[in-house]
Image (cartoon, rainbow, N blue to C red; front, side, top):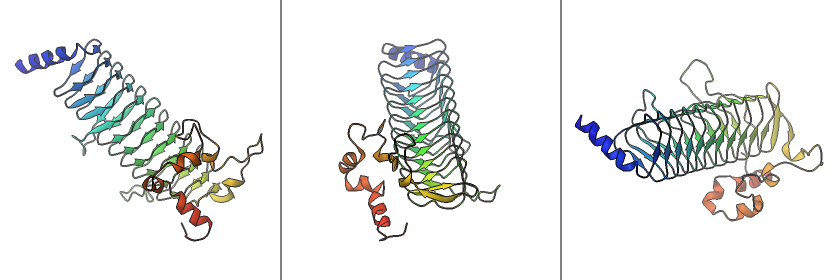
Length: 305
């Protein structure tokens, strides 16, 4: 009883800086910064940190060991820090300026970068590492132990199997499936690896262990069972190379459209200039993440990817 009174006293002291709805429940060792709005029927368990200017909508459950960065919005009916049987007690860290829409569930043990955004009813399982400026569309499912880079766009209804690696600046369109079990059912998982600047179009299925290399384009509905080479366009079942992305023209203007980074800017870090100008500002280590120097050597035949 005394412990309950003390928790209530500490929370009411914090209330001077925050706005809450009705029927909330706050655990121990909870830190909440200024200008946070908390809706009705919210549960915040122990060891939670919420940054300034956040909004937590109605019926949200924040499990123990969750950190939410400042200026983030958490939609109604979300669960943050959900535990799997094996991973209780690990931390979920969400960077600043996140927008997590209603009904989404994020498991414990994951680290998510700044300006992360979801659609509705997204599931992200445990031990997933996600970079900055990533968006995950409605009803998409990331099955844990995955690694996702910066500026990745996953559209709605995408399934990402365990152990998948998605490098920075990748586009994955609706209903794409990344598989991971070559002999189901088994525990011999082999994740797909999609390299920087690649595109996977609607409804494609990538089989376990496949590599989709830089600037490749997987066509809609393709079933990909073999590695896809840089700049290749693959289509069909089984997918076969049918073209080079650099040969594709805009059907209206007749102009080149790939590699897309040279023609598309919206929401990209080179939005105010162009890709080459932005790329020239990166240091050597940052450039290694995109392997473009390696691509140049590949084109001249000096190495084999």
